[in-house]
Each structure stands twice: as structure tokens, then as C-alpha cells.
Length: 170
Length: 322
Image (cartoon, rainbow over the protein chains, first blue to last red):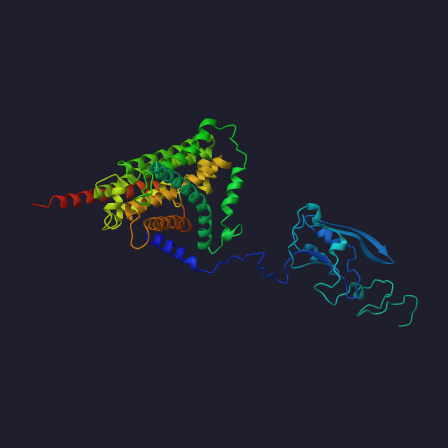
């Protein structure tokens, strides 16, 4: 009986407590730097697309919301189209973990509501940003051994020139 | 002619105000619950979200009026009307002030209230029965047992007041409290009536007939649209009615210093409406056997004891020992 009355009193005192609710559209909630929100495709420091169309993100995606098509220009791979269906995306971040080139990244932005479902399908031009995202200095082709126009084998960062198999000289 | 006009204004005024208050209570309750749970509650539509009531009303009125094919159609439709009719009829005997009030001077006022609140059981039990589904039936049976049990000592708890005032006439009862509110000499009666009132309106912590976690929604599981709305408004009207009656019977009704009588009545009633909502915010639901044991083993003896002692004291005062 006494505990019930005490409960009543303590509950009543909550009238004077600060309210926990964040009035969302007026006050924005704090979003952590690693918040997993809207997915973007980033560019490397030279302004080129980072995505090399390896399909690892599409393979990792548990809800199959990523679709892309590989195309090749002088040894360098690009996605011909890159499509994310955000009405299916669960923002798990597996694509970001799978990406070998830091191309696909999740950003602290979740305000992407639409009135029509087809509008939630983002194409490459919607996904691609002009910056480097979370990894400013990284350029996949600058550290990989692949030869592309403007960079031959052995010219990457911290890379030795390839061994010439045709000679016996050390 | 002017007397007739005044009477009509009285009747319709009280009807409209009660209906309006019951509707607005849906919003007040959510706001207060929010405040007590460190939330805001509905605060979007209109100032402080007050227009939420209008939005709810529009929504519920435009819903499809659907009767389940397995239900007993006639009874299913009548049941929600019964709760409204009985609650509103019962409110007729409340003297809001000396002048305002439909039948405040009815000489069987209290008995009429008890009769009407007993009839409210029908709406619940018929609604549960006519729905023809398990949860509804269980809810209806529970409500029936609960309300019958708590009806008994609700009447007994009021008997003390009747003994002191010597009348069933609510107007007389209020006037008899000029010197001392009955909450002082009849404190046990007040507590018992308050608890019985909560049980009668099946509000938390006695809302077993609805018991969301075990019965879906209890007796109104199958109801939707405005028929559900009638149950809902009926419940809030019941809260207002019980609060108004507590005010009238134990807190001296409209009487109080300085402020006009109508304001005193509203303040006291509003306090108890708030208390009802606070109970909902604070206390968990009882188990069914606890509810029954509480009613029969604690409240009934307490009410009887209160009545016996009150009667003995009044007799002793009237006939001093020689």
C-alpha cells in the first residue's frame, strides 16, 4: 500500500523532469561520425571514380539492393551503371566493409524520405560525390600493381620495379 | 417559458460539455502520460497538440463501420450505445452548482447513479458476448465479474455518506457538507469509493477487462470505427462521472471560498481526473485473482466496517447514552 503511494508520488514528480524527447524536425539528433546512413560513392584525390566494379559490395549485400555493371577503359575498370535501391537497403554497412577501394561509404544522413518508391532507387549520378569521403589520401591505383594509362608497373607508391625475367644480371 | 429555456440550456449544456470533456480527455490523458514518462505526447496538431482530438475524431468517424460476420449483429450494435446512454444518464444527477445540473435534487439521486452504473455492465458483457470471439468473451466475463464485485461495496461505501447526510439527494448531500467535507469523517468510505470507481470505469490498475497483453483488447477486440469510439468516449465519460461524484459526495461539491462555485467544482473534478491518469501512469495491472481477493476480502469488509461504525456513531450522537 505504502509502496503504491510512493510510486504515485515519484511518478507525479516526473512532471518536473526534463523531457527526453528530441523534437526531431526542429532539433536534429546527434549523429555519430560512424553513423550508417545514406550510401555514397566517393572519388580518389585525383577526382577519378574509386569504384573498380569488383561486385564485392553487391555480393556482400544481404538484401541484394546493389546492382552494377562492369565496363573497362584501357585496363581500368569502371561501373557502367551503379544502382542502389534504398527502399530495400538496411544500412548494415557490409558493402562498405567489403569494398577494397573505399569507394562505397555510408554517411551520417538519413533524411531521404520520398513519396514514391521508385524515387528511392539511386543511380550512379545520385550516388557519386565529388570528394573523397572518409579516406582523404587514398587512391587505389596509386598503391596497386595494376598498369593503367599514366602509371606503369612498378610506379606505384612503395613499389619496386618488376623483375626482368629475360636477363641474368642482378 | 424562460424557465423552460433555462432547463434546456442546462440539459444540452451539460450534455455537450460532458461529451466535449470526454473527447478532450483523450488528448489530455496522452499529454499527461507523456509528461509523467518524460515525453511530450501529441504536440503537433494545433497549440500543444490540442487539435489531435479533432484529427482523431475525423479519423474514427470516417472509418468503415464494420460488423464481423460471426457477430450477433443487433446486440453488437446496441452494446456500445448502452455504455454512453447509462453514463450520460447517470451524470444527470450530478449537481454541478446549486443552479446548474439536470436533476441534482432527484430524491433518489444516489440510487439512480448506482442503478445506471450497474447497467453499464451490460454494455461490456453484451459487447464481449456478441463479438463471438474468445478474447472478447473472456474480457466480457472478466468485466462482468469485476464490476459486479466492485458494485457491491461501491454502494456500501456511499451508505456512510447517506447516513451522515440523511438523504439520497445529492444537492442535500452537498449542502450538508457546508461545515466539514465528508472526506474527513468518511475517509475510509472515500478510499473505498475511489477504488471501486476506478474498477467500475475499468481504468488501470483495474483494466483487466481490456488487458492488452493477454486479451488483445478484451471486450472491444472486434469493435472498430465509431462503435469502438463510443466505448472509448464512454470510458472517459465514466472517469468524469466518477470524479464529479467524488467531488460531490466527499469534497463538498461546488462549495469553496472566494472562487465562483462552478470553478470550484471544475477544479475538484479536474484534480480527480488527473489522479485517474496518474494511476494509469504509475501502477501496474493487478492479476485477476488479486483483483477479486482485493475486492471481496479487503474492500467489502472495510466498507461494511465503515458503515457499521458510522451508523453507530450517528446513533450515539442522536440518542446520547442515558
